[in-house]
Image (cartoon, rainbow, N blue to C red; front, side, top):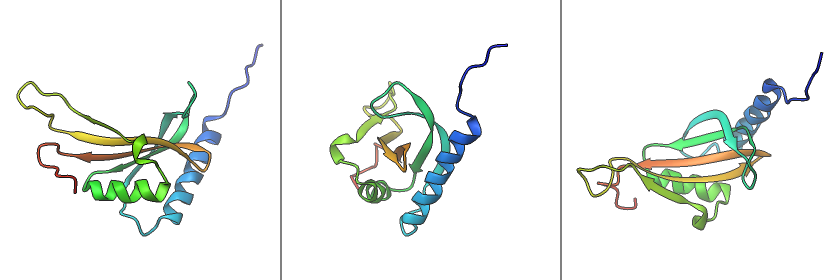
Length: 120
């Protein structure tokens, strides 16, 4: 019988869950995001591990508050929109940054409607 060394799923999820608790405790006064544990790419590698996805749907100002609190450089923010053949811009836009928090990858996303967003 051959065995291979692997990381237990529970162990890596526990690390991400611990980072989530630390994050929410440290930033309890920030706007409440949608949070999810998911497999994310480790910045600077080709590896995927369990990490945190933090999504803000109501205001880009909320995204900005989280970006500042996490110390993410504005130059590290990516912006994209859905593509539509009937509109010049898509109907959904998002800002996204990938960083590391408490040793796990963290994806910060702020959603907006590019047809109405004025940089709030």
